[in-house]
Length: 459
Image 1 (cartoon, rainbow, N blue to C red):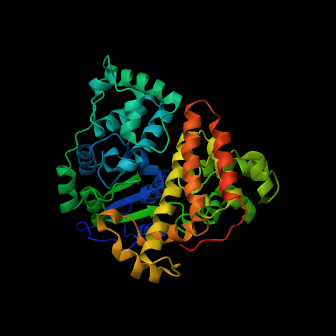
Image 2: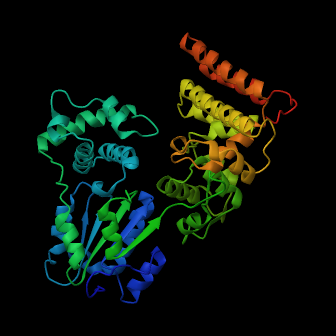
């Protein structure tokens, strides 16, 4: 096993997985590896690092894997304790709850729920207890007579989607299990781990953290990176900020390595549309496709369409983007997929109203600032409109985004936008009195986006 020497380094030059593995092969491993991003890719990458550090014959004694429910104090004890027969030691820490970002708690909950149904009861319950502690609940709360209701979990997790029906069963059963086994959340005291990182790990000891998504603002995340190297692993994207597309070709080639098969551009595009950037789901579908095509060497788009079921959801702003572009086919496509994914017509009307309202605001702001003249460039807009916007209103908004909304508004007449907003209010009222929401939203899209071209007012 390779053995790092000396105190923890302040910065490790190998900031990608390939470079880290090359350094290990050259006998120059870091003391800490923090892999963050996509949970599937980080775990796979972390295992490749751990296996490069520890020969297979030594892994039963020199490689220790810790689940995400452990606390920083437990990690400090494990990494600071020598191996049973001496020598080097690697601790692989998988998705620790104490590093997860608040934005990813909903994903961590869903994973724990899935583990419960897979029969991994103890690990799932431990993860639930750790999540509950992050949200302010104890084991006694989970297993008591009045445990937190699914709606309370939804409110605190703040995920893009609500809890699934099976999640309610998981909460009841796992909460009861946690109480019966007296599972307790690990203490959040990080001082012991921070102190160990500061002075350096024992000679030959390495900590490998497969973190998934982390909260980069946490001091412990920064200490991990300073003590070794941080390796981001995620599916890359391309395209404009509001029309991102996952770039799957490098990952697909890696997943098909050793099979003698490849995937053409059309199949890649279909997988991007149907599966998206979920690497774990993508790996499962690629494995099925490789078997499905038999002796054929190339996986094609028609293979994907025959075998793969769509799981990728359109981003929340996709419908608004299609409206801003005045692209009726795209908007109807997003509407169809959103409804198939279980989106509420009430939510879609709210999204549409927000998009129309923002275009109206920016159109009027530009009209007033420019004295009724059309603004032709971002530079001109920045000189005329931007100085008049209250900094408190801007907050984290990017000025270029507001300029883009102004441009989008010019694809419509002013009266079209006003009428469209009023029509959305009527649709919302009709839905609340029993009308079919899906039909109302579709009718609004056709009537507003598909209206005959009119003279485009420039202000």
